[in-house]
Length: 308
Length: 324
Image 1: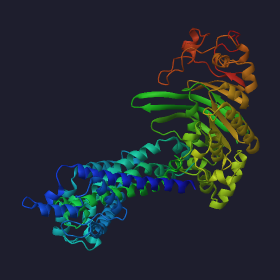
Image 2: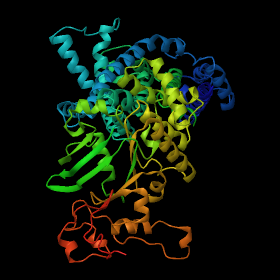
Image 3: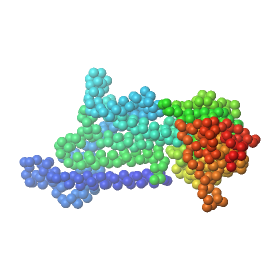
Image 4: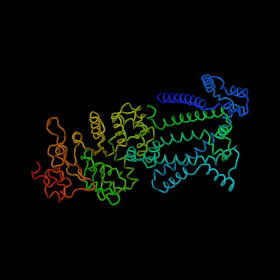
C-alpha cells in the first residue's frame, strides 16, 4: 500500500513535470525574437506567402489560443508536422527512436558492465593493481573525447581489422562500436562513483556488525555493502541513460547512424520549428520518464525513501 | 565456557609512531558471569573487545604479546578463517548505536537469519522459524511483522532488541556488549539491561559488559574490572567494589556519580584526562591525576596484588591506610 502510494505520487510528479516543461518550451520559443514564419519563408517571400506560413505554423492567432492548441495536441502526443518533410513530427521521432534507444541501452549496458565490477574491486582491494587500473581507466575515460574514440575504433575494427561494418544501421553489429564509444566515458563516471560509494559504505558501522556475525568477506561486500553503495550509482546511471536517450549527436554523426540526435541536428540546420519544438518536448518527456523509473528502482534499493 | 585474557599487550603503529593501547590486560570471565569493564573513553575498553572478536585490523594494530582463551581455544593463534567461524557462532557482540550498526537496506529477518543459515546450515524456512523464537526471547513478539521490517521502521529500543537478537541467534557462549545502553533513553536502558541479565540466565552466556557508566554497571554486573590507560587497575566483585573501592581511580570514579543524597554539594570530578596512548606517564599511569601520588608513583609501576580474596588492585598505597 505504501509502495503503491509512493508510485502514484511519483507518477503525479512526472505528469506535472511534463506539463511545466512543455509550457516553458512553448513560451521560450515565443519569446525568442523574430517571426519563425519570416525565417521559413526567406527574404524574397511575399506577404501573402508569409501569412500562409503563419497559418500553417498556427502563429496567426493570439498566444493564449496557440497555447491551448499546443496543450490539446500535446496530450495526444501530436507535435505537429515537419516543415521540411511534411510528415508528422511524431512519425519522424518514432522512426528514429528505436535506433537511439538500442544504442543508449547497449552503451549504458557496456558502461555498467565495465564500471560496477571494476569499481567494487577497486574499493574492496584499495591501492591494489585493480585500483590503479581503475584510476587510469577513469582518467582516460573522462579525458578522451567520444568522437575521437569513435574514429579510432572505426579505423581499428572496421578498416584495419574489418570485424565490424563501417556503416549501416541494421544489426547489433553496427551498434557495437558506437556503443563502446558512448559507454567508455559513461563508465569512467560510474566507476569513480561506485568506488567512492563502496569505500564509504565499507567504513560504516553496520559492516562491523556483519564482520562480528562471522560473515564471509564476499557476503559483507556483495550482500551488505554493495546494495547500499549502489543507491547513488543508480541515480547517476539513470540520469546518464536519460541523456543518451535524447540522441548522441556526435557519435551518430561519426558512425553515420540515423538516430534522434541527427534528426534534431538537421531540424536545427533547416529551421524546422515544429520538429525542434517536438524534439525538445520529446527529450524532456523521455528524460522525466527515465527519472521516474530510476526513482522506482531507487525505492527498491533504499527502503527509507518509500516513507518520506 | 570461560574467557581468559592473559597479559594482552596491543599497540597501534603508524609510521614510527606507536600508541600503546593495551599494556598487559588480565581478565577472566566465568561461565554465566556478567563482567563489566569500566573506564573513561580512550582507556582501552573497545580495543579489548575488538581484540577478542579478532576484528582489529593489522596493520595498524600490532599484538605485542598475550593470549585470549575461550576455554581451551587460543583465539589469537587461530587462522583468519577459523576466527571468522567463531565470530557470531561462539562469541557475539552487541554495539552502542543500533541505528548505525544495523544495515539500513536489509530486513531485520534477513539480518537475523543470515548467520543461522551460514553458521548452522539451516534452511531459509527453518531459520525464519528460529528467528521468530529469538525475537520472542528478546521481547519483540509480534513476530512476522518485525521480520519484514527495515531498521528505520523500528523504534530505538526495538532496534537494540533486534541487534541483541542478531547477536544471540546462534546461541553464542560468550557475549560482548559494548555500551549497549549508552544511546538509549533511561527507561529503555533499564529494559535492555534486564534483557541482558535475563539472557544470561536463560542461555548461561558469559558476558563482557563494557561501559563508562558506573550506575549502569552497578545494576548488571557480577564482577567489575576498572581499566585505566590500557591496564586493569582494580578487579573485584561488584558488591566489594562499591563498598570498599581500593584504587584511588576507582574511588574517584565512584565519588563522581551524582547522588540525590549529596544534593547541594559540589559534584566530584577527576581533574585532567586519560593520558594519550602515545605518551603514557612513567611509573603509575594515574599519578599525574592522583591526589595521593608520591615520588615512588612517578618511577615504579605498581603490580596488581590481591588484597582480599577476589579483590585486587594495582596501587603502591593500597592496604597502607594512606588512601582515605
